[in-house]
Image 1: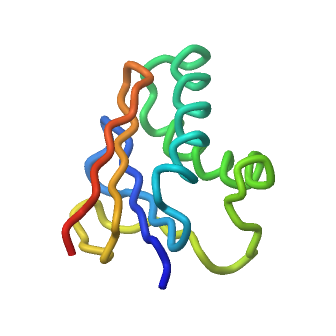
Image 2 (image 1 turned 180 degrees about the vertical axis):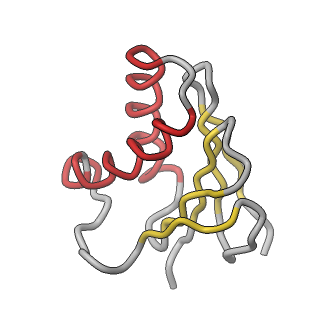
Length: 105
């Protein structure tokens, strides 16, 4: 069974990113921490760009962080409040930090 996760960007309240597998913190946090820190330094507060660039980062940094390289499965953009059966929820904060929690199913 997959460890599903969703990723929210602070400042975006209409959509979130769905990651179908390997969403547990040991796999997902190192990637998100690197991305969020670098983005916050370079771009500051720009939630729409952060959302788009995070998707691009999943490809660009995919091999480094073991994010999976399937071309047609495993990732999605879904409504912000939709229950995706996620096991973890991550929120990329504007200050470069990340909040996350395990979701009770």
